[in-house]
Image 1 (cartoon, rainbow, N blue to C red):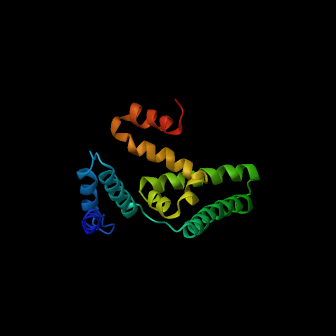
Image 2 (image 1 turned 45 degrees about the horizontal axis):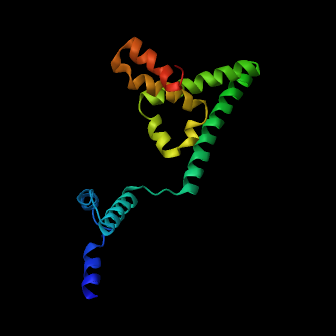
Length: 164
């Protein structure tokens, strides 16, 4: 009986071990035949996944998304109010200018690699408004610009949107 307990203690997976050790445990038991080795491999894999999976605070992410998305919407409303009250435009024209300015600002921020950092911070708060659409188009163009004007910049924009 003591031998079985000693064997189990030797075969236990240290869940606080470094990632490299957990990976080597998984690889070492890749072709395990018996149930105990398979269980050890599964334990090592689960420990590795738990160690490398980031943890998030959902309420904090919701607050950040709400604050940044709300700031974008407030900026849009300020642009609309400026166009209507100061520039004397009707509501439809002011809305068009607001959309244009927000899309342009998003494209410029994406070009300077500021928008992806903002998106990582705020999540869906910056991806849901019209600025997220502009970011998607601009980032696709920047990603494929090395393939040339026609196939890279022109063609890949539409593939990213799902138009085929």
